Image 1 (tube, rainbow, N blue to C red):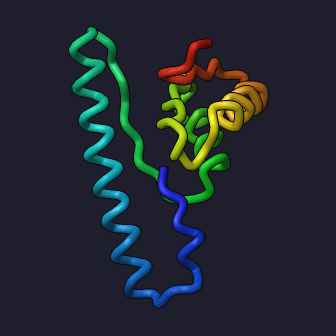
Image 2 (image 1 turned 180 degrees about the horizontal axis):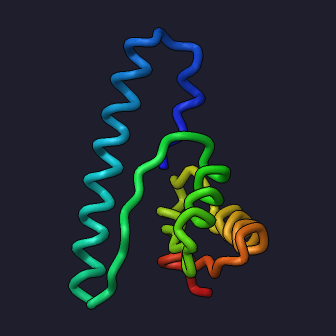
Image 3 (image 1 turned 30 degrees about the vertical axis):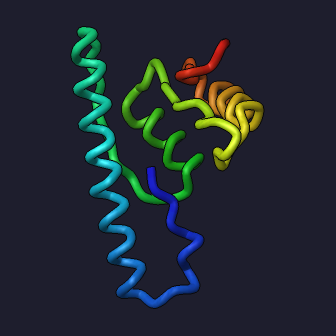
Length: 108
């Protein structure tokens, strides 16, 4: 998921270039994740979307009939989001979608 709305103040050609690069990076990361889980005999489907993070995640969960949403945990003290914020987001997302949400790297 890429939310580039913070770039709305920039020129259109730059916005298109950034969006394209973020999409390619996202696809690369998802291929890596799929390969890692495949090693553990887990099937995962990768979906790349652009838009508002929460709205797109809810839409994908509904469209695909998701039974599990897996999120990455905080990357440490310099992370953009603290563990507590991720946990609150995950709990709200689970309530909104009715889909189990797990946070990787979390002690929960």
